Length: 181
Image (cartoon, rainbow, N blue to C red; front, side, top):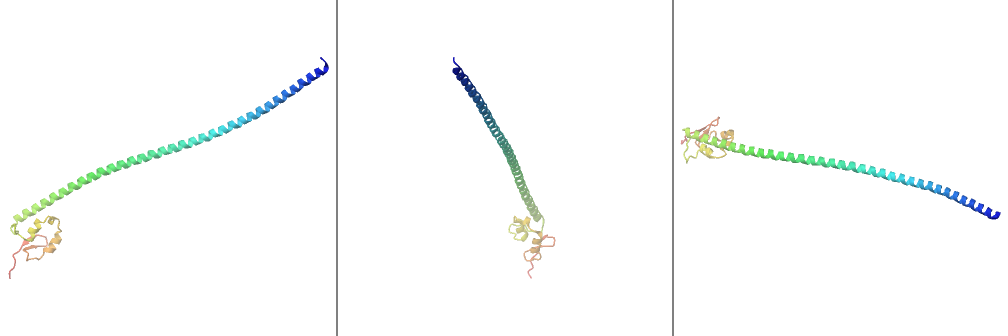
């Protein structure tokens, strides 16, 4: 082998070594850039995951609040139903009491009317004939006579001698003879 060939082989080895060194350096640089890019991408993914986590927590809080609001509204609705049922029971009880009081009042009125009839039968001054048109007989037979104001009856009847019935200041009915003078 001659020297020129040997020089060319050495130059070829040096060039190849330089190319390898440059390739390794470029490879490291690309590797560093690639690592930086991967690191940046990983950071972006972490930030996205953190934003997603925050959004999920917000949604969970909103769901919990909505659930609490719904439970509160349901509880309020149940309370309103219970109050309505209680009011219905009280209304039924009051209606029953009204009916009871009304029938008691009617019984008392009937008893009072019966007592007045008996008093008229016992009193010799009061006529109880069917044709009797005296005011006492008329009042006795009227269904609203028990509810009349005695003062109004006294004021209306006091001194009326011509109708045969006169009421004194106590409201007592007396039959008087008609004057024919």
